[in-house]
Image 1 (cartoon, rainbow, N blue to C red):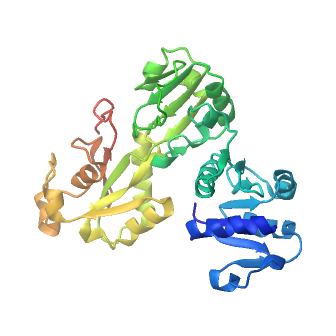
Image 2 (cartoon, helix red, strand yellow; image 1 turned 90 degrees about the vertical axis):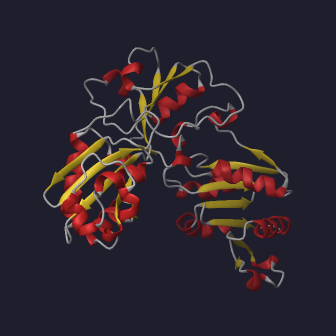
Length: 369
């Protein structure tokens, strides 16, 4: 959490936020001017006069998390007019005036209030109070599942009913076709009402009330209708694009070739990690713009690094101009950390694309064009 505000309005409250400031150096502290100690300017503390309610719009606009040393009821009333949606609201945490309890109030999962609550409670040696069912039950938090790995949810439509199925211990099938494996964080076995399978095809033979689908594939609505009707799809960043292009190729052409390739292979653009190429192309404006526009990583390798990779389509012509026997294929292999390509090579106009998938089922799902 990049920006956190620590807010107090009482004599005891300012002691708590000042204490927290020592451990949370990047946090901003706010309290009432009448409690000033004289060192606020030196410490970068902001003083205010009048009702703290007048500061709410500023807090909600400027901060990812807000920690109040104010009664829970008062905070609920003050923030109510500013609450919009859990995907955009900041985390809100409340501390009691004695510093005994730290309570997660708003945006517990997606906003990070539950984690912020734990951090603050640890620093104050206080008791954390978290009421989110999945946290209390130590099960899968559907709305932030895999977030620490960079997974994204494709569509939030079914998040609430699927979350209910998880916490109510209804039959759940978890399909993991790609992505990191270490997502179960609790010191107990996976609950018996959950079953992990390795493909959507395998899941169709299971009995389930809801499904968690971890995949880089685009799933056809007709074939997977029953699976998609009660599921949340997670997109791990496992698709690595090796790209070669002629000098001066436009971002529009590069993007079009990538989009067409992903569509042909039924791969989701939400699972693209980034583009990899040769270091001669590190200043290629078209490649840079595509990565910037999509928030993708941009990686480049030396000819020596590329030539160490196995290449099924080496080119003397490419070697003559670049010093490497290939660009897109070895770059995709290096970036994905795999030894086999999902797509060896596709050339279209000024662009060549290869695809590597960094995931534990890559060989099972291999497809070449």
